[in-house]
Image (tube, rainbow, N blue to C red):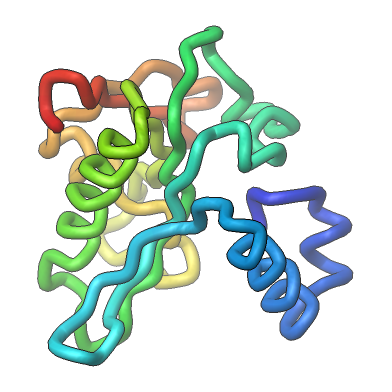
Length: 159
């Protein structure tokens, strides 16, 4: 919910308020993301939707739009503790690419972290890792401060 709305909305709605905001989005039939399962157990999630759903991106000095190309955005991940470093994020990226392409997207953007140390605290890994996106075929299209890249992939040749 961080990228949907203002920072004030996020802070004032922590906990139940943000859950309620998310429920309203789902009930309105808007896209929110992809789940990964191990059998019947959900083990991962990523937020993916048209970039226009994430109004906070254009208020960001790092993530504001680069051009006028309509794109979808993959903004954040969650992977259950026992499933980290086992390919769940990669699976979610690939499924998000497929899902976005099936829903008419031609491009998908993401906003991963470029780690400065080998070990990154989980709290800072929520946007995914830069190298993983590059390995899949995303290309950096902007990096306004050296730390906050925007990566994009054309889905037309993949999906």
